[in-house]
Amino acid sequence: MDWLTERFAGAPERTAFVHEGRSVGYGEVVATVDELTDRLARAGVAAGDTVVVAGDYSPEVFCLILALARLRCVVVPLTRSSVVEESVALGVSGCDWYVSAGDDGQIAAIDHRGQSSDNALLTEFRARRSPGLVLFSSGSSGAPKGMLHDLERVAEKFRRQRTAVVAIPFLMLDHFGGINTLLAITASLGTVVTVADRSVSSICAAIARHRVQLLPATPSFLTLLMASNAHREHDLSSLTRITYGTEVMPQTTLDRVRAAFPGVVLQQTYGLSEVGVLRSESRPDGSLWMRIGGEGFRTRVVDEVLWIKSDYAMVGYLNAPSEFDADGWFNTHDEVEVDGEWFRVLGRVTDLINVGGQKVYPAEVEGVVLDVDNVSDVAVHGERHALLGQIVVATVVLDRPEPVADVKKRVRQACAAQLAAFKVPVKVVLTDGPLHSSRQKKIRRA
Image (cartoon, rainbow, N blue to C red; front, side, top):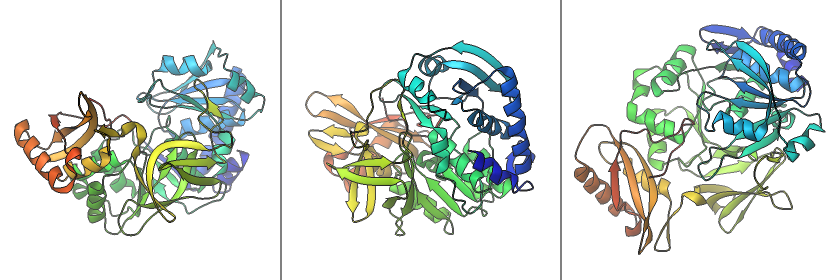
């Protein structure tokens, strides 16, 4: 990854980060990477060591990851709101060294842990003498999976320099999308605007203050943004592009965002931690259809499910069998519709609700319920039923209090008018929320 710091060195005066009110140039980034490389080496950190990095976005944490890559270490990023317990993560990956960042983002301590892991895949990977990256799934459909990536291969996708932008890295450091965004921005010599508080109001305030051009977000966040009306309370005119992914976007939310940001390009993205983030293009008709692929990626559909073959795929799971077939194709478990070269993601197979043999896609129902008066957010899931197998349940967050019977009546009427009868929620449950995880992704469960 030396090409990346060489690129930084060629533009020392450009602003790389705006963090806690201070601007950090690319020249300072290079100097900090050099300094941290020396500090780590003096502490005894060596090639092949597994190093846990505990911290949030800051220039110093980014420089630490680059320094560890230079030393050919295996990096395990964790944050305060990581979706996996630290003890669980370390039990899977091991931990030779634990490096923590303080609240100010500065590197506070480099502690030797010596917690070994007898993982065969890690042992084999260390023989490559390549820098590694371990990320964990949320464990929403079972135990969290540790995914080992070759960090050099992950970064290689960004060697070709693109247009520089000012952007907020919305997803966290322990998420592939967060690492992907961070590398994409810096590899193009753009500016990373860090936001410690990822609430709607804080994100909007940061966009207005720093004239942010690109907002990568999730559909859940954009649903909250539209419900809060924060986009009317802040000057977001600097935005030129909003990207959204990691889950299915309700058409209702997409329509609202288009209306609120008429001059902004809305781009649906697609990727998985196992295979990387594909290049994408949204169909210009305001729909949820997109074209995906790009150099290094191939796609195919088998029995309505999307499969991907990627040059940037992970090395493998540390604690689970491989889900790649013998030819290197990965089953995404996302059901899709195909229209020529365009795809529309209907939902994850594990989220599908089976009502008497009929498929119900939660996002389709959620899109209708979001249009119901007084509903600010909704999550739809299936509940076991003795006769039908499952029934549809809608968990709803309201703008203002009202009896559940009144809400249920309006929800059922709206769904009955637009959906088949088996898709209409049998139960409507009220909650104060939130209906999303720390990764701003919809939580669909009882």
